[in-house]
Length: 220
Image (cartoon, rainbow, N blue to C red):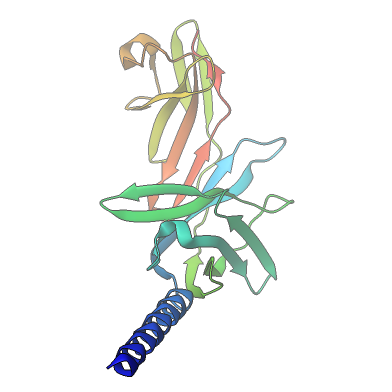
């Protein structure tokens, strides 16, 4: 009887060890998943020419939770380019229970990003990875826009389909966004947030996943 109890305890101990090993292996080999993603271009005002940046985000998941994700890479194999975004650097957004991670700062020194096929690689803390290809062939169809504000009146020079004022307070914090229906007008008529002190023009060409963002100018 005593021998049977000892055997049962030893067997139970083996079961616990085996189960622990199973859990460890299961967690370590679970690959992250990239469900969806997108690349869009933003032109920032530069001197003398605008500078191109990509915004790149992926909708992703990991069996051990979003906190188990470690590094997101973006490759352009033809041009032999690689960008690395670590978990403490990427932007995390959650919409309808879905997690999106990415960055708005994909760029190159000369300011002209390549087009074509990009390869995303997502790696978790266990070293497991997954990859998915994305294509960006957007073209800049319009000249860089201009924003002028003087004596309470605003004026924009823009052929872009959609134009918005993006407002910030005196400390540079985001205050709000207003879509412009006219290229000229009175600032007071826009009903901007009371905290707004400066504004930039955000011009958008959604069909080509391309936008332009001017430097901020005073609203006074």
